[in-house]
Length: 208
Image (cartoon, rainbow, N blue to C red; front, side, top):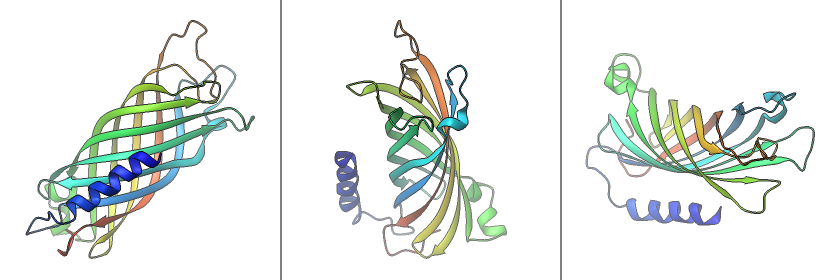
Protein backbone atom coordinates (compact mmCIF):
# COMPACT_ATOMS: atom_id res chain seq x y z
CA UNK A 1 0.00 0.00 0.00
CA UNK A 2 2.90 2.38 0.72
CA UNK A 3 4.25 2.29 -2.86
CA UNK A 4 1.08 3.53 -4.70
CA UNK A 5 0.54 6.28 -2.10
CA UNK A 6 4.16 7.39 -2.51
CA UNK A 7 3.79 7.49 -6.30
CA UNK A 8 0.67 9.65 -6.01
CA UNK A 9 2.41 12.04 -3.61
CA UNK A 10 5.37 12.38 -5.99
CA UNK A 11 2.98 13.05 -8.85
CA UNK A 12 1.26 15.76 -6.82
CA UNK A 13 4.60 17.43 -6.19
CA UNK A 14 5.49 17.30 -9.88
CA UNK A 15 2.25 18.75 -11.17
CA UNK A 16 1.78 21.43 -8.53
CA UNK A 17 3.73 23.94 -10.64
CA UNK A 18 2.02 23.10 -13.96
CA UNK A 19 -1.25 24.97 -13.69
CA UNK A 20 -3.49 26.33 -16.43
CA UNK A 21 -3.81 30.11 -16.48
CA UNK A 22 -7.62 30.06 -16.37
CA UNK A 23 -8.48 27.35 -13.83
CA UNK A 24 -6.87 24.72 -11.62
CA UNK A 25 -6.47 21.66 -13.81
CA UNK A 26 -5.11 19.35 -11.11
CA UNK A 27 -6.81 18.13 -7.97
CA UNK A 28 -6.24 15.47 -5.34
CA UNK A 29 -8.95 13.61 -3.45
CA UNK A 30 -9.38 11.25 -0.53
CA UNK A 31 -12.53 9.18 0.08
CA UNK A 32 -13.92 6.70 2.59
CA UNK A 33 -17.16 4.76 2.82
CA UNK A 34 -19.31 1.67 2.42
CA UNK A 35 -18.84 -1.39 0.19
CA UNK A 36 -21.72 -3.67 -0.83
CA UNK A 37 -20.97 -6.92 -2.74
CA UNK A 38 -23.33 -7.94 -5.54
CA UNK A 39 -21.79 -11.09 -7.04
CA UNK A 40 -20.73 -13.78 -6.63
CA UNK A 41 -22.57 -14.62 -3.39
CA UNK A 42 -22.15 -18.18 -2.14
CA UNK A 43 -25.15 -20.41 -1.53
CA UNK A 44 -26.85 -19.99 1.85
CA UNK A 45 -25.13 -16.63 2.31
CA UNK A 46 -26.40 -13.05 1.96
CA UNK A 47 -24.68 -9.94 0.69
CA UNK A 48 -25.38 -8.33 4.07
CA UNK A 49 -22.85 -10.74 5.61
CA UNK A 50 -20.04 -8.84 3.88
CA UNK A 51 -21.21 -5.19 3.90
CA UNK A 52 -18.94 -2.83 5.78
CA UNK A 53 -17.29 0.58 5.98
CA UNK A 54 -14.01 -0.61 4.51
CA UNK A 55 -13.61 1.37 1.26
CA UNK A 56 -10.77 3.88 0.88
CA UNK A 57 -9.39 5.67 -2.17
CA UNK A 58 -6.81 8.30 -3.05
CA UNK A 59 -6.72 9.96 -6.46
CA UNK A 60 -5.24 12.63 -8.71
CA UNK A 61 -7.44 14.22 -11.38
CA UNK A 62 -6.37 16.30 -14.39
CA UNK A 63 -8.95 18.28 -16.36
CA UNK A 64 -8.03 19.05 -19.98
CA UNK A 65 -10.75 21.70 -19.87
CA UNK A 66 -13.72 22.38 -17.55
CA UNK A 67 -15.68 19.58 -19.25
CA UNK A 68 -13.36 16.57 -19.59
CA UNK A 69 -10.49 15.01 -17.68
CA UNK A 70 -8.70 11.92 -16.39
CA UNK A 71 -8.19 10.53 -12.88
CA UNK A 72 -5.58 8.05 -11.66
CA UNK A 73 -6.39 6.42 -8.33
CA UNK A 74 -5.51 3.82 -5.76
CA UNK A 75 -8.29 2.11 -3.82
CA UNK A 76 -8.43 -0.38 -0.98
CA UNK A 77 -11.60 -2.38 -0.31
CA UNK A 78 -12.02 -5.10 2.30
CA UNK A 79 -14.92 -7.54 2.52
CA UNK A 80 -15.10 -9.11 5.97
CA UNK A 81 -17.27 -12.13 6.76
CA UNK A 82 -19.40 -11.08 9.75
CA UNK A 83 -19.61 -14.71 10.85
CA UNK A 84 -15.84 -15.21 10.95
CA UNK A 85 -13.12 -12.65 11.65
CA UNK A 86 -10.53 -14.75 9.83
CA UNK A 87 -12.44 -14.94 6.52
CA UNK A 88 -12.07 -11.94 4.21
CA UNK A 89 -11.17 -10.71 0.75
CA UNK A 90 -9.11 -7.56 0.14
CA UNK A 91 -8.89 -5.62 -3.11
CA UNK A 92 -6.11 -3.18 -3.98
CA UNK A 93 -7.25 -1.28 -7.09
CA UNK A 94 -5.21 0.80 -9.52
CA UNK A 95 -7.53 2.61 -11.93
CA UNK A 96 -7.51 5.15 -14.73
CA UNK A 97 -10.85 6.78 -15.53
CA UNK A 98 -12.26 9.39 -17.84
CA UNK A 99 -14.30 12.18 -16.22
CA UNK A 100 -16.91 14.57 -17.55
CA UNK A 101 -18.47 17.49 -15.73
CA UNK A 102 -22.15 17.01 -16.53
CA UNK A 103 -23.19 20.12 -14.63
CA UNK A 104 -20.91 22.24 -16.82
CA UNK A 105 -22.06 20.59 -20.04
CA UNK A 106 -25.75 21.30 -19.38
CA UNK A 107 -25.17 24.73 -17.85
CA UNK A 108 -26.23 23.69 -14.35
CA UNK A 109 -23.43 25.66 -12.69
CA UNK A 110 -24.27 28.85 -14.52
CA UNK A 111 -28.07 28.64 -14.33
CA UNK A 112 -28.57 27.32 -10.80
CA UNK A 113 -25.57 27.51 -8.50
CA UNK A 114 -21.80 27.53 -8.86
CA UNK A 115 -21.56 25.67 -5.53
CA UNK A 116 -22.92 22.40 -6.95
CA UNK A 117 -21.51 20.18 -9.68
CA UNK A 118 -21.88 16.62 -10.97
CA UNK A 119 -19.16 14.41 -12.42
CA UNK A 120 -19.65 11.19 -14.39
CA UNK A 121 -16.74 8.77 -14.62
CA UNK A 122 -15.78 5.44 -16.11
CA UNK A 123 -12.72 3.36 -16.84
CA UNK A 124 -10.80 0.37 -15.57
CA UNK A 125 -7.60 -1.00 -14.20
CA UNK A 126 -5.95 -3.79 -12.27
CA UNK A 127 -7.01 -5.30 -8.96
CA UNK A 128 -4.68 -7.20 -6.67
CA UNK A 129 -7.01 -9.51 -4.75
CA UNK A 130 -5.80 -11.08 -1.49
CA UNK A 131 -7.99 -13.83 -0.05
CA UNK A 132 -7.54 -14.87 3.55
CA UNK A 133 -7.10 -18.49 2.41
CA UNK A 134 -4.47 -17.70 -0.26
CA UNK A 135 -0.75 -17.12 0.22
CA UNK A 136 -0.34 -14.66 -2.66
CA UNK A 137 -2.19 -11.85 -4.39
CA UNK A 138 -4.31 -12.63 -7.43
CA UNK A 139 -4.13 -10.15 -10.32
CA UNK A 140 -7.49 -9.53 -12.00
CA UNK A 141 -8.96 -6.83 -14.22
CA UNK A 142 -11.75 -4.45 -13.29
CA UNK A 143 -14.19 -2.05 -14.93
CA UNK A 144 -15.70 0.86 -13.00
CA UNK A 145 -18.46 3.42 -13.62
CA UNK A 146 -19.95 6.00 -11.30
CA UNK A 147 -21.15 9.48 -10.50
CA UNK A 148 -19.79 12.10 -8.10
CA UNK A 149 -21.86 15.07 -6.86
CA UNK A 150 -19.73 17.96 -5.60
CA UNK A 151 -20.38 20.84 -3.22
CA UNK A 152 -17.93 23.72 -2.94
CA UNK A 153 -16.76 24.33 0.63
CA UNK A 154 -14.13 26.96 -0.23
CA UNK A 155 -12.25 28.28 -3.25
CA UNK A 156 -9.96 25.22 -3.42
CA UNK A 157 -11.99 22.62 -1.52
CA UNK A 158 -15.00 20.51 -2.52
CA UNK A 159 -17.03 18.03 -0.53
CA UNK A 160 -17.78 14.94 -2.65
CA UNK A 161 -20.14 11.97 -2.50
CA UNK A 162 -19.43 9.13 -4.91
CA UNK A 163 -21.44 6.12 -6.06
CA UNK A 164 -19.39 3.60 -8.04
CA UNK A 165 -20.09 0.17 -9.50
CA UNK A 166 -17.09 -2.09 -10.08
CA UNK A 167 -17.00 -5.28 -12.15
CA UNK A 168 -14.17 -7.71 -11.43
CA UNK A 169 -13.00 -9.95 -14.25
CA UNK A 170 -11.95 -13.58 -13.63
CA UNK A 171 -12.45 -13.56 -9.86
CA UNK A 172 -11.52 -16.88 -8.21
CA UNK A 173 -12.30 -16.18 -4.54
CA UNK A 174 -15.55 -15.26 -2.82
CA UNK A 175 -16.00 -12.36 -0.40
CA UNK A 176 -15.33 -14.70 2.52
CA UNK A 177 -11.92 -15.53 1.06
CA UNK A 178 -12.91 -19.06 0.02
CA UNK A 179 -12.23 -20.50 -3.43
CA UNK A 180 -15.33 -20.24 -5.63
CA UNK A 181 -14.71 -23.42 -7.61
CA UNK A 182 -12.60 -26.48 -6.69
CA UNK A 183 -11.40 -26.64 -10.31
CA UNK A 184 -10.24 -23.00 -10.07
CA UNK A 185 -12.79 -21.73 -12.58
CA UNK A 186 -13.20 -17.98 -12.47
CA UNK A 187 -16.36 -15.91 -12.19
CA UNK A 188 -17.30 -12.31 -12.88
CA UNK A 189 -17.85 -10.37 -9.68
CA UNK A 190 -19.21 -6.93 -8.85
CA UNK A 191 -19.78 -4.56 -5.96
CA UNK A 192 -20.91 -1.03 -5.10
CA UNK A 193 -18.95 1.64 -3.24
CA UNK A 194 -20.70 4.56 -1.52
CA UNK A 195 -18.10 7.04 -0.29
CA UNK A 196 -17.72 10.63 0.87
CA UNK A 197 -14.54 12.66 0.66
CA UNK A 198 -12.72 15.90 0.05
CA UNK A 199 -11.16 17.34 -3.11
CA UNK A 200 -8.33 19.87 -3.06
CA UNK A 201 -7.62 21.88 -6.22
CA UNK A 202 -3.91 22.58 -6.68
CA UNK A 203 -3.24 26.19 -7.66
CA UNK A 204 -4.18 29.77 -6.90
CA UNK A 205 -7.16 30.05 -9.23
CA UNK A 206 -10.69 29.82 -7.88
CA UNK A 207 -12.07 26.34 -8.61
CA UNK A 208 -15.00 26.19 -11.00
